[in-house]
Length: 464
Image 1 (cartoon, rainbow, N blue to C red):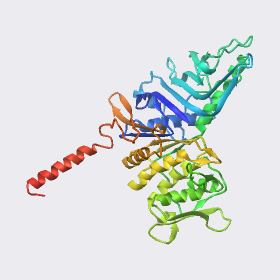
Image 2: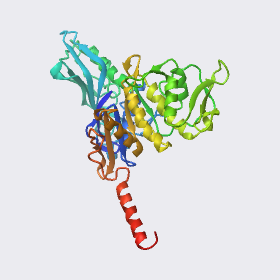
Image 3: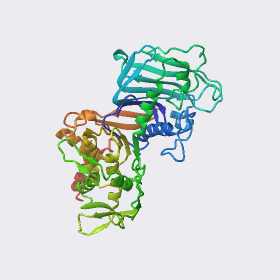
Image 4: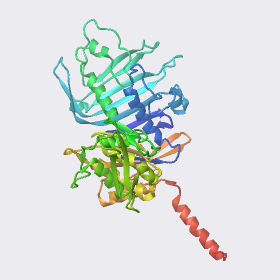
């Protein structure tokens, strides 16, 4: 999972500062405070890594991608195209990585990777974005780790930029006669084939880039505007990657996961995937039963049949409250995502009753504690929210010991004249926020005090 992130000169952020990313990381804040920019940045990295156009450093917009950030001037902070977008991203590896220098037989290893890059427009009148530097850090240099990257030497014309390797803890050795400069990296993170061709002992560089690709591939996104329920769903046996950014693949995901069993926490009994989803909908007080079944035997069309708490009748999903269809993609994605995934969610509480919003905290805690096939699922959640009910329930569960405060990170974002500003909310062992920001969820306490004063004034005037 991701361990930390820092972004400079991207959209509202002059500098986010170092962000600790916990298994459950939540971003609160006012509108236009930069919360969404953080998830947008990570999604831009993913869609760039997935693109077949290897020459483009970043892909901020594409008609088939989840985000559209325009061009470089649209996304650089303050539209200052002479500034560089820079970032640093760290993550834990599912298994320890060991790299070998075939020339010296020396080995380098680590349980984590940190990647950093600087990206911007080159000098002169060129409009194409270039990568000024990029670097991987595997483990710690003092413990047989290494640092390896590339740095721009000369920027001429597209396709003619010249780079050099930068390194620590490892000595790359040139092959005789291969004295030419290196070409541009692949996207923002990949070593070109010339690195392996020009150096005797650089055959492992692709492993570093592959580790970043794998980390980004195991990242999914669910947006705030989720798909409307349908009376019937076609299913041809496919296994979707996730539920889709609007939850449109939720029913296909349920059907694809029919043979999976999840243990929703320590000392809890494992449940089949559909039973687990149904039990959560029932626990949230939304329905009494839930089933996905073919409309005709052995058919390719399915319907979602539910029973509400108010009646014994079984009805189609389209005939019950809107909230069920809105929370269903959240539930499915939490448990459908493969192990070691990072799930990004924007406003999962949208269109939900306050009691269901509070239940999301319990859902997310169970998500990061769940096990499958005898192993921790190791899921990480990055959530953008406006829900006070969700936060209060999360604080309560910390106080009750259901989750440790170390596994939670909460941030408050706000706009300022100089750009967005982020504040880490400090939690004590009882779940209390010890540095509660002014105007967090509005000035609730001032409103209560003024209401009391107004009531007293009306009574004194004889109007109460």
